[in-house]
Image 1 (cartoon, rainbow, N blue to C red):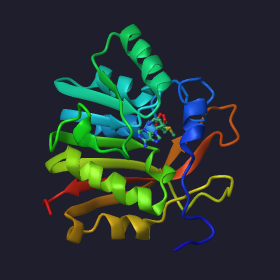
Image 2: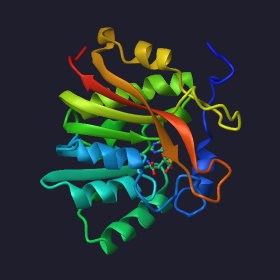
Image 3: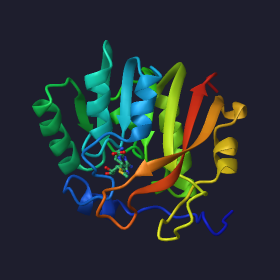
Image 4: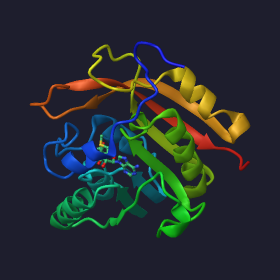
Amino acid sequence: MTNETDHDTSISKELFFRLSGTGKGIWETNRSQPTTVQLVDQKRFHGEVLDIGCGIADNAIYIASHVNNINLTAIDLVPRAVEVAGEKAQKENVNIQFEVVNMLDDLSKTNLKHHSYDVLLDSAIFHAFSNDERLVYIKNLEYLIKPNGLYIQIVYSEKETRDTIPRRVKKSDLIELFSSQHGWTIESIEDTVYESRPDSPLAPSVQAYLSLIRRTHQI
Ligand SMILES: C[S@@+](CC[C@H](N)C(=O)[O-])C[C@H]1O[C@@H](n2cnc3c(N)ncnc32)[C@H](O)[C@@H]1O
């Protein structure tokens, strides 16, 4: 199913390997997303937290330096991004465990723990996936999340009008994919923005959805 804002396509892994960790990715702002700041203020992060597709860890470092008593792990597909993120975290003197992981792989072969995370943060990853990849990704979210855990998703939304963005996610797709039939309960889907690097073509920001999605039962 496609419309003008949403095509069944993925952002190529090659693009992430080329940009992630170089300082040139449009998401590499060197500061936390305002939505993450708001989520920290709302005390959404607790216990075991996993930042999925952490990039250079702008969000993870903000969380680690503003929330007490959490165990934070951050993963990314691109080794260079994880290396840069690790150096930044060390400089900021915050405790984050970093791993290189492809969220479309078999996670039982990684160090990530089964049904162990209270909170999963997905800041601008989901819109990178095709329809088939979405299904693999969601199975992996289900592998990671604790019963009653919270999946927080920030994603480019259909409200964005610039068509240079490959995939802008529809609310109706989120409602279908994260239905109670699949063991999820959507607590809220709100409009927000995802900030871009000030010198990038998508500056200052892209229209986005912030969704809070609870793993209410295992299927
Ligand atoms: C748009 S950036 C967002 C980075 C960070 N979450 C933020 O908001 O600043 C997307 C990140 O997801 C990573 N990524 C893309 N596909 C991935 C996958 N299959 N598994 C893990 N990470 C992935 C990319 O390398 C990139 O660092």
